[in-house]
Length: 469
Ligand SMILES: Cc1ncc(COP(=O)(O)O)c(C=O)c1O
Image (cartoon, rainbow, N blue to C red; front, side, top):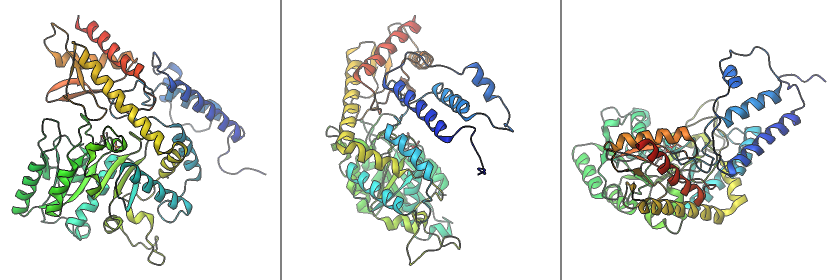
């Protein structure tokens, strides 16, 4: 029988075998640090400058090209990738993604058992981090989780605003001066305006000052401005500082203001014994953001927004459309989400928690925290290096190189990061803290070992000394 549609040039089992061979060799290459990073090769460069192919090519060859393109790209899954907030591409997550794409269920309406998997994954994640969630949604990441939560907060603060628009009703958001810019982005998108994000000063540990948040809210209320939400950051992107959630919960409770916790990066540390205390008060929040594609090691995208009361999402997102009828007053999944079509992101978290269990996740997170403390100690022990925060709270450990005789340390450290990124033995990004340029390593990969952390310090010193002369 003729196969209609889009046939491959070989049986699809052959394509599957080749793809799994590429996955196998990628996994093997992630297990240990590699000395060099292959750069764009000639044949690939030619392919990438080609025009739209009118006719197809052998799938095995195309898969080989795709694997080479990936091998020549930067992969945060490698154990010496310390830049930004990386992700690790946990193996069962990769398998789950393949299965989820294969079935491609429709999560906008009723997807059958997939809906139950999603619900259970939400409940398990909430239990892992210690938040009493009544519901939640999977998103593309912290940016959209924060927006989702703030849409719900806006509707709660100003009922009916989704219909009327803000009109002449001024509103404001409150967060640390070091909150992720997704809070400003949300204010822009929600019509609150980035100018109405009160960027509140931080204390000596780079945590937002709850007393100043309270004062800002009271000032706004007196001026007729509606406080929509306070956003506590549980692990700032810059230094990993965790805002005083309990104090902020107190401020919010006294004023009837929504408390959102942006734990996109840091929230998994709530289940690590050494860091759990930093998250005191989490259970009092109205909503939280956590990215399983950051520090729960899963492949992107696997963001989650958890809410204390599922109805707050429903009030913000429910729609009645002729092509999306509600049966027996049952809401559709899409009635709680900003997205309509979306991939089955829950499957990889569900599978990972079943395969590894919560204890293994706690152990991997604990190991990352211990490695961050090791890095902190190595930096303290080396007179040419300087820590940029007194006591790093999570796994971001910013430091700079201060060789004798170098006057412009900012320029030196900027050049150092550029040189390290060209060298490729360790990969780290730069940051500016109070105007001081530094290296900003962040440890969120279960593959990273003590040897990798020592290599970071050794290579930074080696290259730093070389470019200082
Ligand atoms: C604290 C915080 N919030 C939000 C985000 C945005 O997350 P995403 O890139 O998954 O959208 C980040 C990204 O690093 C983050 O660190």
